[in-house]
Length: 228
Image (cartoon, rainbow, N blue to C red):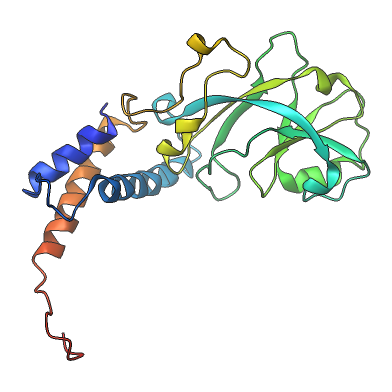
């Protein structure tokens, strides 16, 4: 495993660009690394014969709140609906779903719920809810809850795991909802191991080095005459 800044440093060293005046800054290298990571992980995750490696997943917690049902993009027969207080970071999009791997209450005594797709949520209200609790990710990246039972209102915090497009997007997400401040940790920081298997770390670094060296070898057209 490696850290993102370590990967960027290795790339700089390989292209002899480790200097203060280089045009290849860390933000650009981070962007390239994150983009290639998402490409390879999307290929892996679309292979249903493979299990999702825990090392590439990130987990965080979100509190819930009640909002107007108009906030939800699904046509619902209600005035209020419960949703997460913040939208989720963008998860990797797969052929049939997003790469959200687990959504559950943080309180072990809370009633578990069914995490379904938005498409199923459109029709689930016509079914008999009973005491079932349903949750779905809407197009606005909030998770919404549906149920005929009021039990779901006792859930005040949920845990979410998944594989996200940009691991750095989780900097402002934490490991719990109502913990004391000294127990709260960010789900991603510069000291966090980059969520990627070791064999992809070397492959991605090598690809980026080759791409950047090719760009450096392209002659610069300094005359603005519309010719290459």
